[in-house]
Amino acid sequence: MQDLRSSTTAGTTTRTAGRRIGWLGRGVLTLALGQGPGCLIPLPLEQQNVVDGGQLLVVTGSMPKFGSQVALMNTTTFTYQIDVVSDSASLAGRLYVQVNGSCCDLKIDDSNVTRFRGQAQVTPLSQGNNLYSVEFNNPVVPCSEGLPAGSTVYVVPVLASGGFIPSSSPNPVINPDGIGVVDRSHYWTVKCP
Image (tube, rainbow, N blue to C red; front, side, top):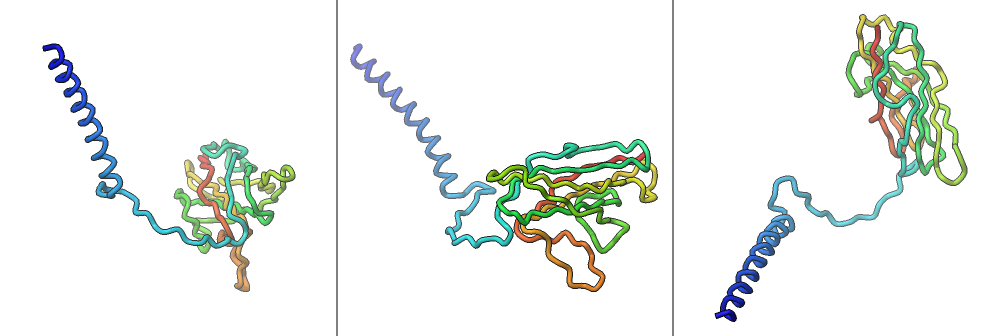
């Protein structure tokens, strides 16, 4: 009798382990066949083309930190600096102020929405590690534009690993169209008095 119980216990153990593997196997099979919603379809690898102006642009920090600021007066000035890792010595930056309370779809043709505030000075921090300091040395006065009390202004830096596309118009608009990798995803929010 003991041998029969042992084999029954062993059989139950084997079946239980088989069920666990079976459920796990179904989950893996579902993922492998891509039957679940939101699954990615693998695409064949293609040769990567070299991007003009570098392929690396990573923001590592800022001063002040990205986020909210409060202007105590309409004449309060701010200066901004960003630390960036890039594989391009052509790294450039421009600073824009979005005054209509929306972020960050820059509409450079409409000064009631977006205003250019300055070019950055880009300085390598040390040789060989591709670390740069992007400084906007001109003080920015985001709330001095005759905005209603309590307005929210977005200060948006645009960084381009290969610099910016030159404008061909006789009255050039300082546009945020960059070469290489372009970052427009960081910003500061300024609450005006």
